[in-house]
Length: 251
Image 1 (cartoon, rainbow, N blue to C red):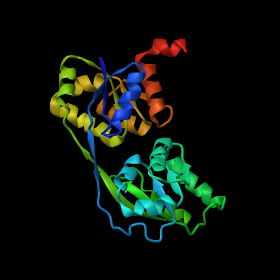
Image 2: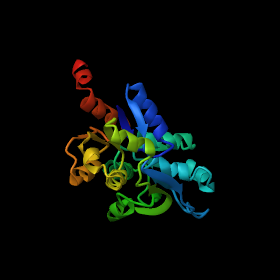
Image 3: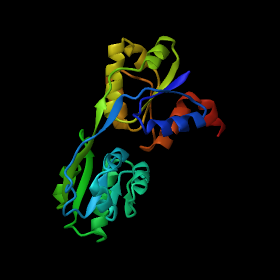
Image 4: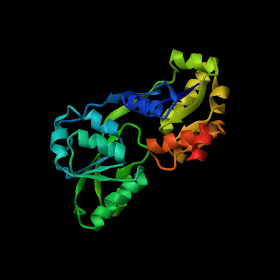
């Protein structure tokens, strides 16, 4: 039986490799597609520091002139995976939060409080088209100016690949991994369109956060495991805890 990996390409390749290394059979079923969004060449005009909540944003500006200019300035990354993408993109002054928007905002405010940056610092938030948290709105009451620039979108793909449909028909899926609220909602839509909603929601659902889990719970899923921290290693631990409890007890 296989674990259904709903993460989009190209990042799903590394996720699949980690799952296979942990002993799982993987069935890729991307439910979102990355699309870069054109932005002005001077989008970083008068910017002192960058905020990034997804590695996809860095992929979107890989060939944009502003990447080189921004790389010399401080960057605030939501978590380690995003920070790793920033390093690959040439950024060197990177501050890393704990994996969610709340910790990212607190990291920025703490940096200001400790006077590592001035309160007058102008931030550029490289964002996706669908914001789960409006950082500019959250930080504005603290007197911080954040310009939001949309650099990518994740287009929904509400249809399962043929291999996934065949696996559902053969009862060949043992769990589903969910990395975002939008992809979880798209999973539910795809299951309804394919006529496998009841079977799909009956499976163990492994979620990167409680916010993602809430989407599935509201749709009727009951067997939900939530990562202890919002990152992939914690998701894999939750998956192992759910599907291989004997291994978890042995450790």
